[in-house]
Amino acid sequence: MSFDEEKKKPEYYTGDVVAVRPTEDDSKLLVDDTRRVAERKLVRKLDFRLMPAVVIIFLMNYIDRVAIASARLQGLEANLRLTDMQYDTVIAILYASYCPAQIPSNMILGYINRPSLYIGACVVAWGLTSATTGITTNFAGIIACRVFIGLPEAAFYPGSMYLLSRWYTKKELAFRSAIFFVGLLVSNAFGSLIAAGILGNMQGKLGIAAWRWLFYIEGAITMFVGLQTMWILPDFPHNTRWLNAAERQLAQVRLAEDAGEADQDTANTSIFDGFKLAIKDPKVLIFMLMCCSQILGLSYSNFFPTLTATLGFNTTITLLMSAPPWIFASILCLGNAWHADRTGERFFHIAGWWWAVILGYIISLCTMSIGGRYFSLFLMTAGQCGFALTLAWVSNSIPRPPAKRSVAIALVNAFGNLGNVMGSYIWKANWSPEYHPSMIISLLALVLATFLSFIIRWMLIRENKQMDKDDMKFMRGPDRERIEEAARLEGITFDEATRRRRAVRFLY
Image (cartoon, rainbow, N blue to C red):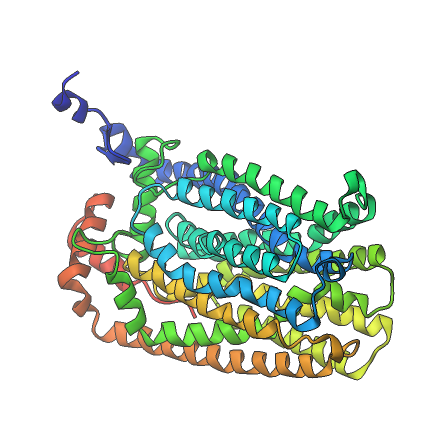
């Protein structure tokens, strides 16, 4: 078959990109009745393939990252002869590589065509690095492992959030983001259960300490998961190979309708243009500060088994008691996100849960009773419901062009995780078991995050009003090009696409 004949087919391959040439049958997907059925089928296909993959990866991501907290309860500090300050440094040093690496990683992700291979390779890399933590014998060795595990991990959370934003509409994204984030919450629950099983049964097997087995086993599982995700994850709507041409066209049309313009960069957009656009947007800076304050306020999560241990039980019971608060938070997280998508509201669905954490801190500051303290742990984990929607709110507030959105997500998450660096040093062992100074610092951080999120809400309301006044300014230059592309994809006129765009506004 000649190249010209090949191009006449409904789809043909050019490198890694699958160019869609819609046929008459394909265009039927855009008819109302057929469209609704086809769209439900497409979203269901994504939900059953994309969502389980990212949830499982996130599960392994945090199990690997917080395994060190469980290992601490079974002799890691003693075996490696770590001081309290050295242990805090081991926790914090991961973020020294994890935070800055997110920005170039997401810039690359927005530029390449095969995010499935990129993310999958990074999962394998951090699984391998996590496993090698088990062979360390001193402070320098474990520091090296923690630095290098942060580099591949940097690709996953902001990269996956960007990938979700390339497939789901504004009214779908919050709930899917929450499903994704539940992987983190479940990892805190089941990570403790898995750790309890390994630490309780593997001590001395083959002459190896149980905490070393913890890293070997969890690292090996992560590598296996990474290899599988290379073919399970989708790429982008225009080139995912396990969708047919009609489904790829529909995936692009959905997002074009959602934003009033095509969800793609212009032909002359460089890898650095998105970065320049993002850093010039004041909302990005405020989101960065808000996320940092939020994560500092929620930094208890890296020390959760230690906080549970203040209830006075042995290691196994402590790890088992660490699970229910995270399971509770997972259920709340899904319900909160579902309601956020139904209403289109963001501020109260995020900040409201920080207020629950503040209440939990106040209870813990007032009592050392087992019941009161354990109840406060449930309130603390509820704060993760707000964090689950943070990057979805960033994506909703800075939607186009995709290059800018990709960098904005990375900047917010990278700077935000500096809160984890600071948080690594505020839960000091000599402040135990009350941890009053730690909780006061975290409480004030959440008050600051609330203030900053209110400013973002006010800015978005103001921008919506401004868009009502001068919508036509978006009809020129690169924005016009994207609107024309959206009109082409949807099979409508430019004027009709313009009217749809006027109905598009920020969620606050």
